[in-house]
Image 1 (cartoon, helix red, strand yellow):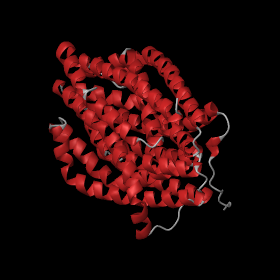
Image 2 (spheres, helix red, strand yellow):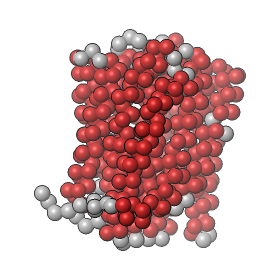
Image 3 (spheres, rainbow, N blue to C red):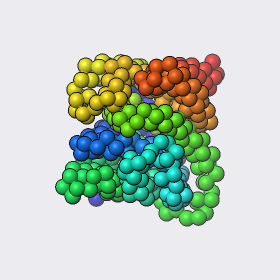
Image 4 (tube, rainbow, N blue to C red):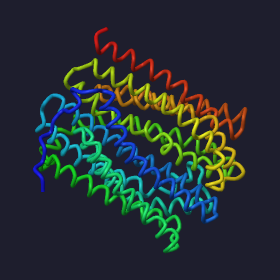
Length: 446
């Protein structure tokens, strides 16, 4: 076993575009692995010939995203503080803070899991699930939700790896789970005739594998764990909650906004929900680089903020916006060209075909502005102002969602839901862009 490396701040020097691309591409591979498995779940279940199964994955995914948002918020907190402390050239403190935050995140995830578990079916009913769709979605969640602590541990460990500049190692951890899931999916769904429950059990095993690999990589490469006791938890808990509460609230806004959208789509029936669920699985794969970018720039911004190097922070922001714009426009063109093939691949008909085709050919380009919002939120978080991100996301999930979706639905029916969502993304993308520019200029003292 090789000797663990000394924790250093790698992003205080060197090319910013190179750092951003290296971190982002490594993270993208890992994310595609996760999201591809989700897409395969949808594809395999669509092969069973029941629209209710695809719709159930859509509803279950909405509730899962709500639960996962807690883990994302806690992992963001862990990454922010670790990167910032490394930037201040305090590796021992960074190790202590990481280990403590990781422990707190696991304990909180257990509490959240226990509190939410009894209300899973009620939550599904509230977002519009009913009949066989409700039964399928409930079966899936009852199996998957208890693994929330494993997911929290994995996300925090991967945040620690990225903060250390080890994006490739974080990618390996993520891919390990994705490969396990991809192998088990067809075996359990078709081989053991377990249907949606087979997809759920594959996810359970994958999450456990990811956690084991991520923790082992952190220990082997940087020995980045210290023994955590109650004194350490009490000492650092205030700092943890001061960042994690707004970070969690920021991430909870998205599933709550999506819940309103899904409940509106559900008015049109299972086919429409299935179509929207397929869109929801395509988005993270098609725009994986945009999703990865927002998580990847955090350590770069965080380390340079710890060292008070604002010019490099501004370079990071500008390059990230440029990358988001170029990638989103290119991907929109590809989705347009491939739209007939994708619709056929998922055997989408009726309302499912309407929504899927509309997204692929027109509204997908507006993800550019969602990406700008992602980048801006990541910068606000890592510059020590997560409250800005919280306000931004909740404003988008309410003001930027409900009236736009309502008016779109009233004037254009089912298609108007996607038009309204696209309009809201545009408005808040512009607001996010202007806000971060003003904020960074003030930080620099301009």
